[in-house]
Length: 231
Length: 231
Image (cartoon, rainbow over all chains, first blue to last red; front, side, top):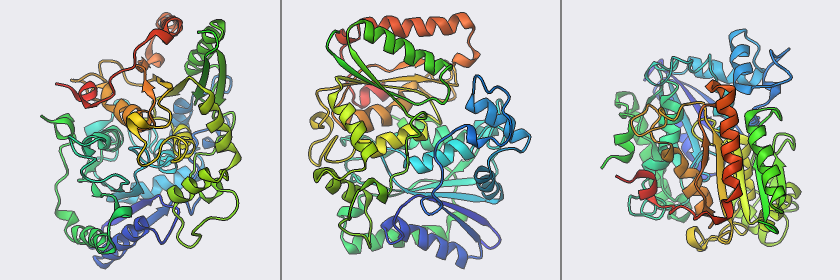
């Protein structure tokens, strides 16, 4: 939708990859709609995933008993977070929709993207206590996970060896995104592109582009346990 | 138990932290039993969490379309993984029990520990296809997550805002550990030490040390959906 701002947080090493194609069609389609699209290409940025003392510029409150969460919270309030965190927070702040594009690594996001979440979505910026879940600070924004998997849809079904795909979405969508207040749109899951035919892969890319045409009309999911584990 | 080997993969920035205390009592108690204990102190090692081309020494098979999983699998078979991965794999290979000691970050492990999992537990070392879940390569080993949380036990209950704690254990215990074949011992969860009294914190440390006295007699959990999501 013209005028909307979208941030794509993208975590794949190879521009020519299937993940790269999904990212590219999203940029194309959303730009075509008149959206402003920003991409954080984490591997290209060599984004720092480790949560350390370096995330605070200047002195910390308690250097002899360093508490990352406490120090980052205080640094956030006084504007002394590391530059790369501030840059990402600015992109999130400006976005109406944040899309995370990544291959599933161990039922979750790759470490480089986990590091983005650990470091960027800090207390004071994305939430406070209180000020989380439905009152999280990012509550006027949408978020969407676009995931590729190694396993097939059948493996990620209720009776499959890896369990329902909703089970692995819980920590990501509820524990992270919903906690920060994001309204969560249904995940786009492209199952097992590596064992798909070229035609099937093209179909997955096309269906993602197709979905994005009407993405602004979608209703968020009801991000509570019944959606994930419902009988 | 005398003669047993234990690897503790430890992810906290501050030696004086509560996580540090839990790690220390584990080292003490297990050493007292006659076990050989090795600690991978990830922040002290500045462990690399990013999964990149650098994880393969020498040439890759397809440099123009880099596939991390494929290249690492092949590098594993021909012995050309990066030194830090090989070092960690050797520690895992020698261990009878692997304990992961970490604070819960976003319903999961901190990125530095996710990177350890992403990079160390690669195909060819920890599993193959086929050769996963009950036939994963690490099937003669035990694993145990020792987690500290920000949220209280009540928040992490079935009716709490963050849902049952078993929900966030699923991707870690089933998706990672069980996938590699590990027999999973019950997680040790120390809830909300930061808002606990000094006495309560000491109690949590003591109960962990106490549990370790009989750890070798414990039966693994039945790591399947009913354990996590059972009615």
